[in-house]
Amino acid sequence: MMLNYYNFDNMKNFKNLKQLKLTDHIISCILYNSPVTYKLKVDKVLLSNFGIDLSLPIVYLEQLDKFFISCLKLALKVCKCNIVINEKLINKTKNFKNIKYLILNTQYCNLKLFNCIYSLNIYKKNKFKIKTNNNNFEFEITSNKNKLLPILKISNNCICERYNDDSLTIDVEKFSFDGKYIRIEVKNTNDTKTINIKYNINLSNNYYEFTNVPHGLEFREVINNNSNFVLCDEKINFLYPQTYGNNLELPFLHALKTFKVLKNQTRTFTIYIGDNNKKIVDIKNAYSNYQKKITNLLNCKIKCSDKKLEYMFNFYLPNRIILDNISVDTHVQYNFKSYEEAYYNFVNKNISALQYYQWLKHIYFGIVDNKESLKIKPLQKSNFSIYYQYANKNKVIQIVSSNDSKKYVLFDNVKYFNCNAISKQNLNKIDDFIVVV
Image 1: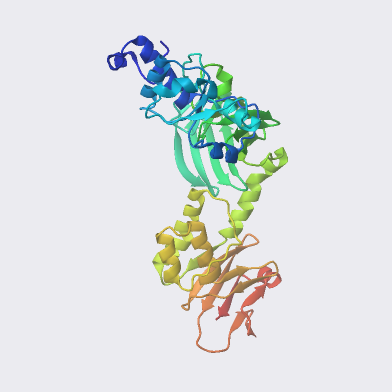
Image 2 (image 1 turned 90 degrees about the horizontal axis):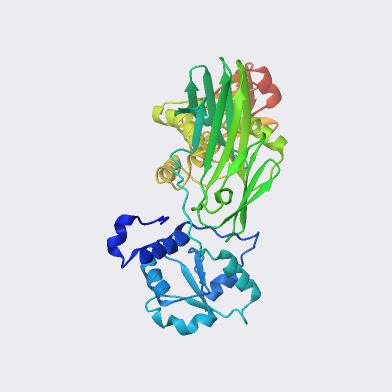
């Protein structure tokens, strides 16, 4: 019977097999079927003004009979949709008690409105069987047909899933840099192996259109006309509902890659997911650009009397920033006037770990890294030390709080009064100095 939602055991709830079959088909269309929209740009205002709920699928009916209406009523107990009826069927709506519906006059309505409704209609007459699509993992990786399971860790400033199989190591590193990136590195120290990688990409609703583009795939969310891309700096294949013909389901998208890795060979490729149709060179360079940016952000550690704050700044927040996997913006300013105010906003989730870290670094500890100099102007008044990474060296800066009006920087046994900054040229030459604030 090609049942999708129900099974034969539900027969007792229906008058006959025919009613069970049609009700199941209507529910299947509402829950699982995706329309083919042919690159239609949906006019949301036009649909809303007509009375369409844009959060629900559209069922457009051009034929009606009493039996179909009885099955439709049963289906609507399970799921919701917009019901649009051709104006020619208005004399049959007397059986539509307690069912909300809209009437479309196809002869006089706006042509654009008709095209939108007709293209977004998810009801089809032909029965279809749903292909089961169980995605328990974001990645499914096999080596010589052996399924590998990951170990999660933080590595190279990225969230990393590591897959091991004897002599084989596969690192899946995730990071954000003007979009979401996934860098996959495969190392093999023994015999040639065949690797299969399946990446399951989550889609949020029913209406998507898929189009092949150079180096990847565009998937467009039809209602909001939002396009996103899955691109790769190597050849990659895709699976989505249209590739299965009549075996349909809620939209899904899988990126697939199969390749061989030789003995003592390392292979690396990067996948990009975002709203820009990027060039391959940009995808290849994203990892190194991300590493430079986050290294510049997390380029110092603090030693102070408050060990809880020290741990928070040196370890917890940097790891939290990486786990949150958000793009690093180092130019945001915050107006918190005290440590207590900033901490309160962080623990109550009004600001992110990245925002809290930036406030501590730039305002509370007062580390301002300009192009020509390093400036120290802390909000907090107790003594502390900064271990600052510059030119691959660790510079030690002692911050001394003084009630004396004389502020200065001390290095090479020379005091520079009324100064709280050191030039990058001098920073290159010395490994430690003192700032009296």
